[in-house]
Length: 406
Image (cartoon, rainbow, N blue to C red):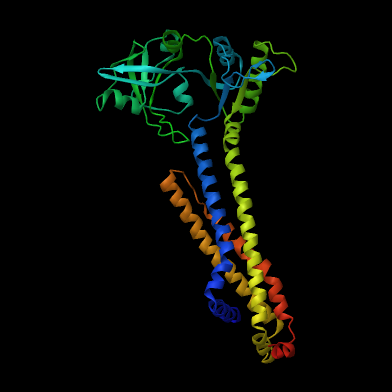
């Protein structure tokens, strides 16, 4: 009851000058709102990255060609096709713990079917690709290892490509010409949706055996990447290290020389992809932290002014029996109320800003209950920390001197 009565007194005191109270809370409002918005944007970006990486499949290791050094400069990934068919066969044959593997060949080709003529991505992959990517076929069937071995002219269409080329008709069994070469449609893939960045439609593609792509479309003799699926998550580190050792041996890379390939696990890819968003979160958090400190200083300043303005009131209360701890509690509750109300408004501002960004900018935002609770508790802590000194000063006033104060 004493705390509740003190809270009502604190609210009445803050209502005496509403504009000053709102301006005092402004730093807390902006700081908490910025923290909520920053965390929401980061969580949304992280969830997109994780979903995109998960779409690669489970327990997948990516082997990328390139990283060639010429004239003292590293050319980076994709600068040269350093992975060969023999490398791929050796990985499948010699590395224990490999459950499935596929090379990848990519091309951007002219596609024709009937009176439709478009440009689209063509992926050349192995028969294991659909199991590795956990990408089911909605209609028809995937091509087989025999199709890969014989470089058969068969193709699977993504949902968008199938709709563009054939409308609503069943495309299975139809002929699609890729760079004038006729390919038979054997299946339609299940929809995948947009890419992580939202700029690429993952269903706008055609998938053919990699042997067919190399012989009939690109003329390439090397690969830019392999995807390897391990038998379990625990096996990934060992398989990764054995792949590195095998490829260094096959490529005759001596001690101290850089690899001409890159081997990455899904976890490493996720960490690299989220590094930028983490940096942005730290920067935004630092800015929000400065705003919260400024808001806390504002609370301390106003509470010190309030103590000076209400010196006679404090003396009167003490003269009728109020103890020092009652005065301390009163001013501390006022400071915490300022901070908590500002924090609540800041939470609403942060959540609202996240929703607006999601609607207007197309960004994915994710506001977690933990971030709201953390912001609320932090705002309360700001009130206690910066409100304690003014409250302590009020509690230590001499009643007689306070009553004489003009």
